Image (cartoon, rainbow, N blue to C red):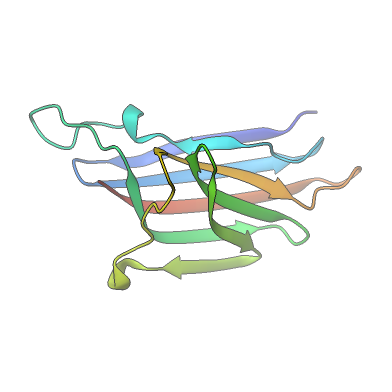
Amino acid sequence: MANTTSIQILNDGPRNVVVKFDGLLDTSELGTTTIVDPALLSDMNINGVKASKLRINKIVYDVEDGLDLELFWDAATPVRIWNLVGRGKVDMHRTGGINNNATSPTGKITASTQGWSAGTTLSFSIVLELVKQ
C-alpha cells in the first residue's frame, strides 16, 4: 500500500474555517504537507478580499500511540505551532487563539510526522477551527 491522507474543508465562511485532516501511514513518515492555504479559501467579504493568514482557535486530535504530528506556520523558516501526541484538545479561543508569528509567512499551515517505523501502520485525525485574518 501507500500512505494516504485526506483534507476536508468542513466550513469555509467569510470569517471561520473548519478543516479535518486524516492520515494513514504504512510506508514512511509524512513529509511536509499543506493542510490549509488561506489563498484557496473563500473570500472574507463581498469585495473579494482574501485572508492572508489564519488564527487557530481550537485543535482536536487523535494521534495513534508512537506517532507525533507536528503543525507549522509555513514561511522561509517554518515556525512550529504544536506537537500533537495521543488524544486531546487545544482550545485557545478564550485567550485570542494561536496567531501566526512566522517571519514572512505564506499563511499556510503544514504538518509532518515523526515516529513511524517499518512494518507498522499508524494513523491520525485532527480538526482545526480557524479564523481568517
